[in-house]
Amino acid sequence: MQLAMRNGADIHVSDSVFGADYNEALVHQVIVAYLAGGRSGTKAQKNRFAVNGGGAKPYRQKGTGRARAGTTRSPIWRSGGVTFAAQPRNYTQKVNRKMYRGAVRSILSELVRTDRLSIVAEITLAAPKTKELSKKLNELGVSDVLILIETFDDTLHLAARNLPHVNVMTASEVDPVSMINFEHVIATEGAVRRLEEHLV
Image 1: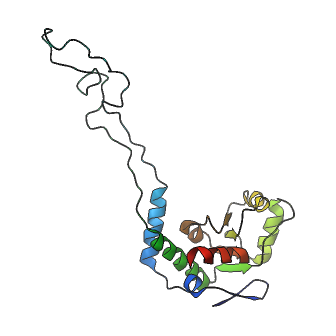
Image 2: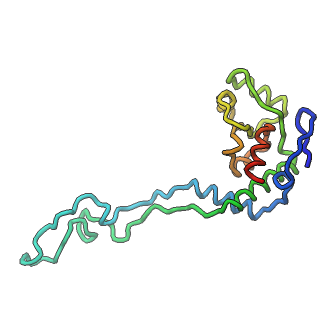
Image 3: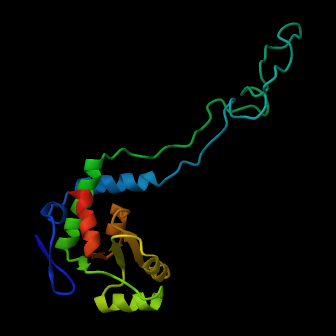
């Protein structure tokens, strides 16, 4: 399929990547799994093995008149471990590679259908100046935007980091959540080719 670039030229892109049907259920599942993977369980208690100390038997086995005890870190002892200690919860959900790539293809195709994806030849700045990048984005008529580039560009990242609704990512590190969080996505021609390599 053909997509129009901002300079008026046309670029030929893969139908399977930029012309796929939108699978809402798959996209939802992948995004939920992606966000869940960023969570960390913080509730934790120490069981008898995690409490420090208690290596020595507190007193001899027989002859004291007290119950047998092998460690002072038993849950029935003061300063001992917790019987059923809470452990950090793992929130990760399994998403195989085929599902993940299918969701990314669905999102890219939907961006094309809703005119939220723009392709440019390249985005370069002479200096890492926020003012210069802001001027370029104003010329393109976008403000809340994700910029996709082929390889890491330190100048572009430094220029974008002070803009609250602008983010710069390489094609290899982009994720589904970032693509749907912004109103507009601007991709360089090199980034489009890199996405096709990963997703075809």
